[in-house]
Length: 302
Image 1 (cartoon, one colour):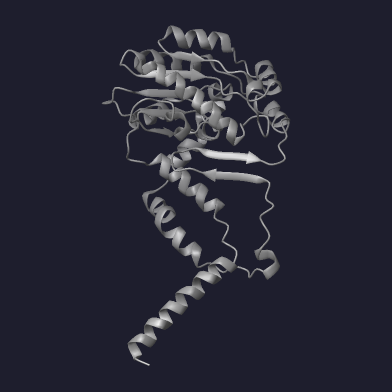
Image 2 (cartoon, rainbow, N blue to C red):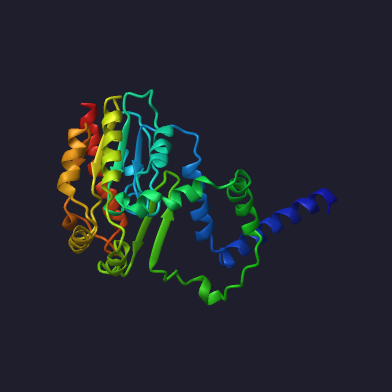
């Protein structure tokens, strides 16, 4: 056989064998890496957006940019810039504006205003500041080096019977490049988060100074032609009652202040959406909520 042909056949068979082994061996657990890439990508994107979603985990898990722009007439883009336990401190607000396309005819900020986002702990915005402080070299490692080295990490061999078994994981989490963390749980418990939230507001209630500061910002931006939509992300009736009783969050007062300062406030009923833990929406309900807000944005264009 021709030596060159022999080499070509060897390469072909090696490629086929490698592909088969990649299928047969379990994939490395990339959830942690996917999560790291998710946060680095959304935080350090250089793009500008027409629509920016902001808030805490109820925002970044509960609003899909892709579904939000679907009902909107025109060629616009959106990103979800929510962070865990996030609040609307001055640094975060400046960060949001740095990603907004101020040259566009459509400039919209979607603020998911939860009780926790206006508390002392929320306004410290620990998670956001932690991601923002990621050194440049670590960002490069996460985005470019870790995915490559992860492929070559040792992986245990699957038995043939296990190859044909589907995953029985009940926790579903998918990180989208547009900043939305699609989340769900097959055996959801709408009471699960109540105990934790009861502890969250002990000595940590809404700061009126934080509310006032936010309203001044809303007023300033609305005068600059930025459309600001505020809403309380839906959870459950029991969660709402718990938060209202412990957090010092007075939605009616916040809504009126928001509107009087040029913002638009949308109200949603908790019973219209399903939560898998009492705090965060199931994926399909997050998509529905996003589309409903998209319809409201479309009205702004008219």
